[in-house]
Amino acid sequence: MRWSFDFHNINIPTSAHVLVRDIKQKNYDHDAHGNKVWNSCLALMDYLSEVDIKDLEVMDVGCGWGVLSSFLAKKGANVQSVDCDKSIQPYYQLIKELNNTSSMLRIADIANLEERDFANIDWIVGSDICFWDEQIQMYVKMIRTALESGVAEILIADPGRETFWKLEQYCNAFCNPEIVEIQLNKPRKVKAYVMCIDSWCRQ
Image 1 (cartoon, rainbow, N blue to C red):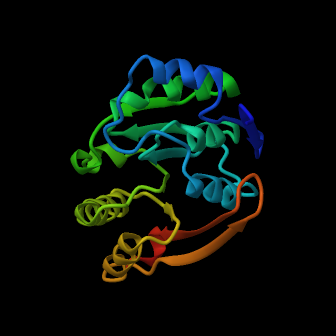
Image 2: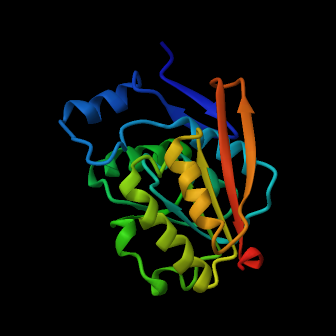
């Protein structure tokens, strides 16, 4: 079993990596499924691989281990990572060290983010974040608030859960999200969807 793999210039450790095993052996419990690198993260990295995000202020919501955050930082974005799961912190730090990237981690509940939290944010990204029915309205509120605060672009990637499609339906009431399908064969076989919301598409 391989310890890590590279994708779009980011080194991503697997659960077999000695440093990941060391973290797990210290009994870090996971509060919100922040326990691995999810496939939709890879899909969103691929989608953004040719996009110029240099100097943008980007918020990575539900950042997990921070693989997407490090990818964005390496492309020149100023990244603020947000997750409610405090146990991700050593994994997040490991990803930064492996990739020599800089980003800021904030442990916070997405439901508590307010307009001022998005005041200086250009883009919001998130992957594999809407997996429970009770999260749908939380993300509807976040998207509404972010657009009202002047966020220009919101990108949410998901493998196609029912909750993701419900979120899209709610968003259709106040904006016109575009859905892009992403398929990868390497480094894993991945099929995912990216919901793209631009500030100009608000109704």
